[in-house]
Image (tube, rainbow, N blue to C red; front, side, top):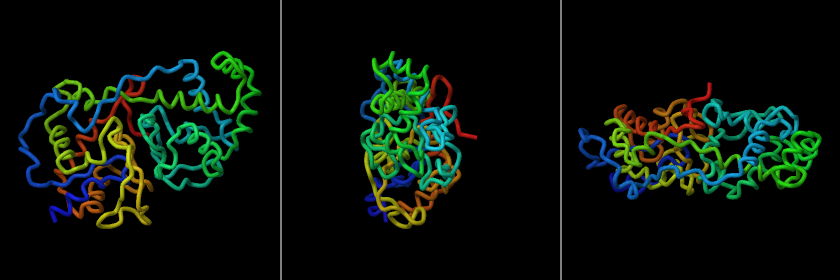
Length: 321
């Protein structure tokens, strides 16, 4: 059982937007261990968020206006922010959000925070280019239900917006600069200053004892094989439902979600069927490792996952109402 479980540790959490996988192998470590200095942060599997890249402030501001603009939807009633609430968790509290046509979407809305560090976008990872992804969302009849040419025509009727685009781009509103402004804004949606990032940078008291123990479990069980790097995931595909289905019907391969701000992005899984982070961890352990975790083990990893919560514009990311 141990060898088999370890073999599959790297596929754990593949379908979970938000939980960590725990399997208490021999040698997890002394439970009395205290948080250690992060002097060797370069050797840790998780990297802190880097400094924000240089961004064109005028274009970011235009992208933010468009992100909240209902003219990007076919009916003129839905904006990007309708499903991606930037005042809370960058997503919503719904299991499944509603598209422009009034139908429920097929999958749970992932957070848009830190999207610049995702190597592919969407649960199925169909898009690598954020510009193409933005166009696909606008023109998907089940999501925004519009066409980009129609959106451009609507926006050009706005004199103030037209002037702003001419100032920022030196040309009139067109499909290319509408998409570029949206992408430039998305690149700005970073959430720095998470306690775990501060620990990685040497702030030794940024983690409590239980949070540090949770991180040790996260590494020793192999969770960091799939959840590593800047986004704590979001950089590969993996199989889910190794020992038993996680959700019906289970997709075979999904993009591993990033775990930043995961404590604030309930509900979990691509169908939104796990209401809490603890429930998601329990279910993932059974589905991926055929393991039944104690509440104490789950609490430790959940405590660590909470340290991945950062701030957007100085305000801690928090669950949507």
